[in-house]
Structure formats: C-alpha cells, structure tokens
Length: 379
Ligand SMILES: Cc1cc2nc3c(=O)[nH]c(=O)nc-3n(C[C@H](O)[C@H](O)[C@H](O)COP(=O)(O)OP(=O)(O)OC[C@H]3O[C@@H](n4cnc5c(N)ncnc54)[C@H](O)[C@@H]3O)c2cc1C
Image 1 (cartoon, rainbow, N blue to C red):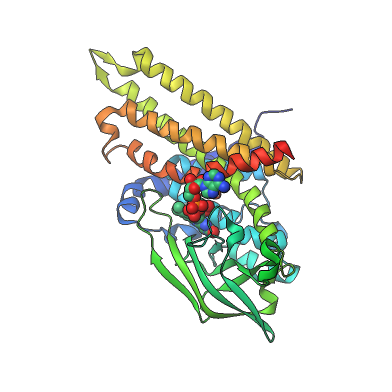
Image 2: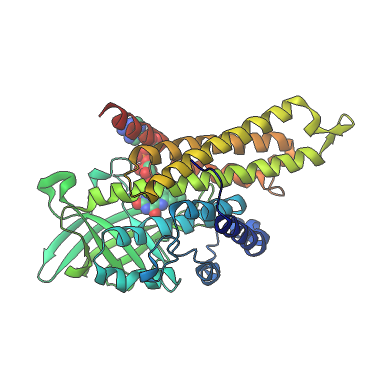
C-alpha cells in the first residue's frame, strides 16, 4: 500500500489548482449572482484534458486514472464547486455512459468531440415523478421503423439547455419493469428535443440545471446504447463511477471551506488576539481537517478499485455518503468560524454553505447511499 501521489499526480494537482485560481476564482461571485454557466471556460478546460479525463486516448480522451480524475475534481471544487459539478456531470454521466456501453462506432462518433470541448454532454435519468426510484421512469421509447420515438419529461438535468449530446433513459417495454428501460443518445437539434425551464437554485448556481422534454422525438436505431432493456442496469453502473466524482467534489469543497476558515481564524482578532488561538476554534479546525482526510482516503480507495477494474458499488456509496456529509459539516463550521462575515457574500464561506447541500442529494441522496450500502452488507 502506497498512500503517496506520484510526481505526475502532484504536477496534475498543481496545474489544475493554478488554473482554478487564475481562471475561475476571479469570477466565482459574479457567476453565482448571475446564475451564469461559464461555457467560455470549456475550451480552456479541454486543453488541460478536463473534458475527457478518463476517456481512452484512442478516442481523443486524456486517458487518466480514476484517482487522477479525483484530483482534478477536488481542485476545481476547492475554488468553485459549481464548475466542478459541471465538469463531473460532463465526464462522469452522459459521456461516461457512452464510453462504458457504446459500440466502437458510437465512441468514435461522440467521445472525441466531447473530450475536445466541441460537444457538451448531459444525462437524463431523473423525472418529475421518478427521482430516487429511478425504476419508475415514465418517459417512453416506442420502436418505429428504423428508429425510436421518445416522449416524456426529464428534470434537474445538468446542461439540459446547453448540452449537444444527452443520454436518456426511457421505457421501451413496460411489461418488463426496470428491465424494460433502455438508454438512447439524443443530439441537440433533433426535432422534439426541447429544453424546459432553467431552475433557480440555492447553490451550484454556475452549473446549469434545466428540465428537458421529449415530444415525439425520433432517434435512429443506432443511437441505442447496448441492447433494449439494459438502460437501467447501465445507469446503476454509471452512478457507481459517478459517485466517486461527487465524493471528490465534496472533499474539494470541504477543503476550500476549511482553508477559508483557517485563514480567517488567523487574521480575525477578538479579545486582543487571533481567534485561531481559542481552543474552541482550534478543535473545529482539527476535527474538520481529520474528517477531510478520512473522506479523501475513502474516495481514493473507491477510485483505486475502479482503476483495478473492480465493481465499486459499496465503496463508491460509502465514499459519496461520508464525503458529502462531512462536507456539509465543514461548510457549516466555516460559516460559524467566520461569525457574521460567514453570513454575507463578501467571504467564500457563505457560498460553500449553499453549494454543499447538493452533494447529499445529487447522484443519489444520503438516504439512498445508506440503502445501497445496507443492501451490499446484507446480500
Ligand atoms: C443541481 C442538480 C443537478 C442534477 N443533475 C442531474 C442530472 O444531470 N441528471 C439526472 O438524471 N438527475 C440529476 N439530478 C437529480 C438528482 O439525482 C435527484 O434530485 C436525486 O436523485 C433525488 O431525487 P428527487 O429529487 O426526486 O428526490 P426524491 O426521490 O423525491 O426524494 C425525496 C426525499 O425522500 C427520500 N427518499 C426517497 N426514497 C427513499 C427511500 N426508499 N428510503 C428513504 N428515503 C427515501 C430521499 O432521500 C429524499 O430525502 C440533479 C439534481 C440537482 C439538484
């Protein structure tokens, strides 16, 4: 067992950190206020390999490992969790689904352009009536000649308004329950692929979230991923990998909130001395730093197992559950250490506190992670 990062990994972390500090940090407040999705960042992130971190080099990706991916997401989230969320959704959901289950022709067609930033990806599982219970999908796909016709509504879709390529789960055989759900690639511009309203969110405001509707939307037969009926089981495997990304996002966010609190505690003086000299503040910082390290280890372990080609249902759920919940606590303690200045937008603590709540909800709530973990333990 070797807990050290390689020289290449340290360089990668440093490179993404410098990018986030230079290109993202100056705009965090403005993008959050305006709910602006910074699409202008995409070419710069693509140049660093961030739009196809784990896609194979043969398909134009950066061919990096799951641990490398965690380092990238952590460093983005340390500065702006909403940019990290968009990068994690692009890398870890729709395009990852194509990478995991697409044919060579499908990967050739989409992965390279997704990695280069020419195309942006999205993934449509959640519906107004089917969130945690994704097997309750209502969107339908009906076979029609040499294609499929999709009808239904997807909700809370990251990049629902900007994505060029979206992987959509739809029921192709109602009689087979979850085994009757199939996955399709739908391209922007296809008639009947309609962007609905953009959500006005508590946090993660620079990451675009919209409704998407399919109205008699016809997709060619070769846009089906795998066989009919495999979409739901594919989606669960996509989520096993995606949750490692949300765990890394949570670790990075917690790190950013911690550093803000530490720096503030060293600078802020009350009763004639820095508040960092009070034991009450020191214990909060010590507990937060310890929890972050534990979360990081759980996350890297899940990533390591993924890199070994192992199934990580249990480890991903544990990493996501623990990292997101300690991140909520880290963000809350950061606000508390900032006192009244934690409650206003001039300091970063307030935004971390709003952004962090998504981590216990997206890609499966904490309750669903506990359910997944318990099922694995009791199987
Ligand atoms: C910013 C953002 C981005 C998102 N991006 C995407 C995306 O790109 N693609 C996509 O498909 N989805 C996306 N989602 C959707 C997200 O995955 C869902 O919101 C999440 O899975 C929860 O579903 P729900 O909102 O319908 O809540 P519900 O499932 O209605 O849950 C409500 C509450 O009930 C609890 N609950 C439900 N079932 C159980 C149970 N069996 N046992 C115990 N408690 C239970 C939940 O834990 C939760 O506390 C996004 C969401 C947000 C907020």
